[in-house]
Image: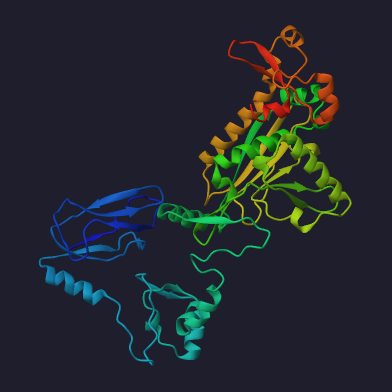
Length: 435
């Protein structure tokens, strides 16, 4: 008697053995929990169909095709152990032992080129039993395992990816069995390009009006967007990570890459430690990088080490687009705009690696970011007479507005705050850093 691998999910052609609940050779009662199998969407506990001693047909972490034997039931433990022993791979002791395949498929089929190669070289087809669809490369690798070893030297599972001296450090976490199954399913349909783009709309009029009214950043709102993005990223570490060799590698820094193209080719400059920068710091760096770009004086360390990328095409009349993720990253955020439409709508086009993130992850992140951007326009809700009645000096350090503007020039930005009594006061940006 035996139990087959069940068809748990109609979209899954195989399942992962997550955990055996009864040891190999042990006794189980019909109806008892036997094994946990993983699909692309869930882990499901499977019950024993019969009573007896079991011999397992798969090990933890192995993927079994639907319909294959999952477990056999035996009347005695001796029978079960004998079956387990018989199924164990034989140990080759002779240096001239025949090459044997380790395939697990229930069929064998050769490509036309493989058939020709086998015929010309008089190779025994039984060597490839259980390998499924066999290509010429598979034939050669089976006969000479060193060929396969050379091909996989640079992509061994678990091997840390190469990093340059300028790259930030990173740590790795194993990808779950469910995520692996999802990756396999998506890879089949997209040929390995498991990227998706979602679009979000932001009405930027209030933010633009505030930046213009307070004479900030030459009227450009990009420093505010990058500032809020940098502050939010540490709360979402998967946005500064990447997928490789069935692992997710997490960077230990928030380095914001900003794509630039002003007629001399596309370059991505690195705003290192963006989560620690103030809007005026970001503005200064962007201006400096722009000048260096135009003067061809950007250095290598200005262009390396970014862990997430932003590309802004809003000034070119581009509404939405599909930005492409940079190497060893999982997200890129594109910024577009719709010209002079009411409310000055902008679009954030977010392309993400589905092997690392989900649509929900992107939705939660972008909703939070947009809410923070909208908060900059809430000062417009304060009655004008209340605003005009405010004493024009910082309520904490006491610097008057005229001196403050003279000292900090374009970086000066008084903020309106409300104390516990509901009274409105002004706070300069230097005091607001520790507020």
